[in-house]
Length: 379
Image 1 (cartoon, rainbow, N blue to C red):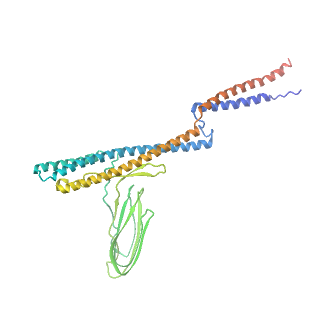
Image 2: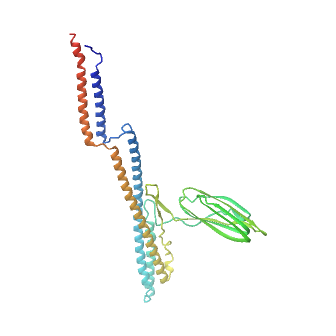
Image 3: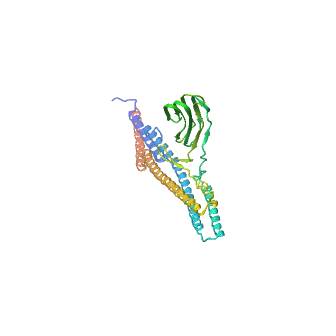
């Protein structure tokens, strides 16, 4: 009989006990955290995918907060538009009464005063309909911005680079050009937003005249540089050549942008001016009864149009909110399916791994008895 000094049974039992301990520890971690993937060590690819899903869910939550703020702003605005429409309806009643020729002078003046007082309430409604620092019924100054004219007199060749900043808005650039005694003209304009304008003409007789070239800028996010190159072949005595008398930029109404969609696009809500001045009711006290009635009817039409516009934005935002909510739920379910542990199964595994660990410990104890039996032969 050959006896080995190596206790292979103990070694096998020790490996089994180590494996059972690791499995038991893993089961305990899953039961305590509720997750089957807690770190990259559990499942590298699954952990990366889960991290991406978590980021997407966070983005969806931020987007939802933006949508909810915008919806509150639209709700407040729509309430203000309704209030203004009610005021205008009252004004129309008074204006119709003023047209009654049987009224005396004092009665007519009293009704006119009531109309004027009601019109003053419109500005109060507009002033108080802001939400979170935004007011959709007040717009920025739309007065054209004049840019310095680079060439005050006629020259044969005009090249210039003009830098201007339209902020975060959009608008229209109007570019005026005068020609005097030109036999040929060439106009090349780089608007600075990826678009250009080119026109080349030849005339049988010297041409003298003016033109205005207009360009619409979409939403801007930074300063743009406009470059133009204008030449003119000329004939005759001065003045002759090219003259650039003025450039103006007229901004569009202010817009509130809502981060509403998962592809990064925004819901743009254009501000609509509904002050007394914007509704052309500033001089209502001096209008004739017919003019007053016409002005109020026009204001009611504007109010109705703006109410419809804001209602369309409310519906668009509601759809975006619903879609965002559905997508968030889908991502959360996907995240849960990927990382959440099945607590029933994990509980059963934990109990099984406990039994395995106990059996491995018993096996190791039995294996360790073999050397004692061998030594007992020498007693």
